[in-house]
Image: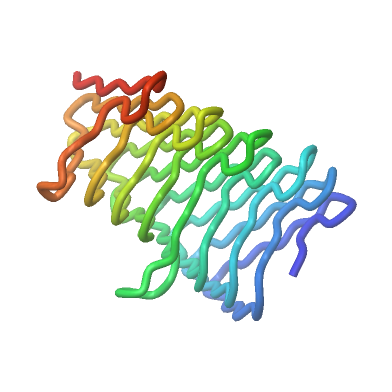
Length: 219
């Protein structure tokens, strides 16, 4: 399914609606803008992969608020375009179904700019491996009790990648089993106002490769 193929497109679910969408989903293809809003106790399932901001010039936006979105395969927030995913008000986004989680990337392609925010208590994003700024620019922000669960994360994976993550507020939690900040590119993680990072005993690698940059700031 395409939302915003060559023009602006939008879809919204509210008041407990349900949408079981077969196959993959693209929000924003070509130079188009696609927007998806899932709220008000609604539930959406994407049978394949979800791509937000597919091509150069495209923009994809998704908001999940007090609702549930399951993506059965992987998710790209910024393939080669611009993209944002907002999870708030107790919204939940699950990539894959536990225990077989799918992977995610924020700012996947070299021309991509992607952002994901997880805000408010009960809001959660669960997935397997996560790349923040794989080849492009990626940002991840947790605040006000938001939670992210990933099974390994890299910020600034490729040489062109630039990834940053912020965990703000004492009830905000990022649980990742292994963390690389600056793989071959640039990475930065900031913990502020009591935000918690739990690496499950797997440790943190800062500036993994020659010429990379990795920074962890606490407080």
